[in-house]
Image (tube, rainbow, N blue to C red; front, side, top):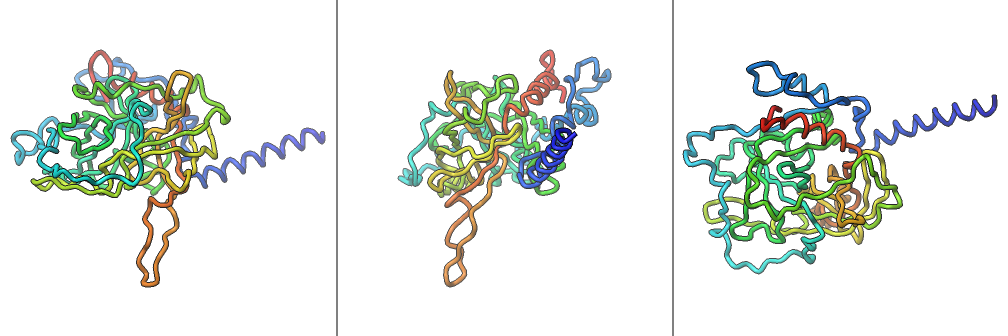
Length: 363
């Protein structure tokens, strides 16, 4: 009897601890894969005759939501198509010797890394854009965070660039995405100002020019790493850490601090089924603009992506005697939270099997 009572108390205490942890960790989902969107992918037979796409209700039933679909026609103001699609950086290069405060990461250690740029609706010249990181996980699919796709204002275009140490390199290839699929539960959390189930897949139909972006391996539910196997994880991205702005001659604004690739090692402090918590090493860690970017570890067959950046805990603001802030949200950096790929590998497969069937994109 005593053993039974102790066992029951342990279950109660464990349950309370799990709920508390869920509320404290920004990327921990209440409506997780165990409760929402669990099921087989939809098939073409589930698509009504004459209908081009699965309905929102059908997709939500298996945890999917179409959060971006590129329009087939551009506004009349741009009869030749959007100018931001073309390589257009030559005119803005002025021979500047600006350099970031840290050495560039080695691109060979960052397979699959690509820059994602979101152009907001109402910005016909493409001069209002935000960026994130992404990872190429198959020929046409790129993994990123849902909040990179679901901004406060609707995205007009989503573009993918190959990784470069300097993103203002002349003639850099760029390809537009046609669709993006977010986890259907992410809307609930983004609407509440929190990040949960913060994962999305971006589909790029024409990958010409992106050949150098390798399709990389991600940690899966079938072969998850144990906490002790996640040693010396490292990140990279184009965040505010680089502190450099740029404007081309025709007024295209390159995001503040988004020019140079930066990255470094992190320390994994909490390894959960769905999230990874990391701490900065030597005060340097991810920042705004690194969202959606990969977290790597060295696996037996090379770099392995185990997570994508969802949120950070910015450092406490410091002020001088006159009340001006003396630090920003990047330095010194502290805690970051990554969505763990192995916790969503079933969801990733479900998106790919459902949305692209017999050469048709049906989401």
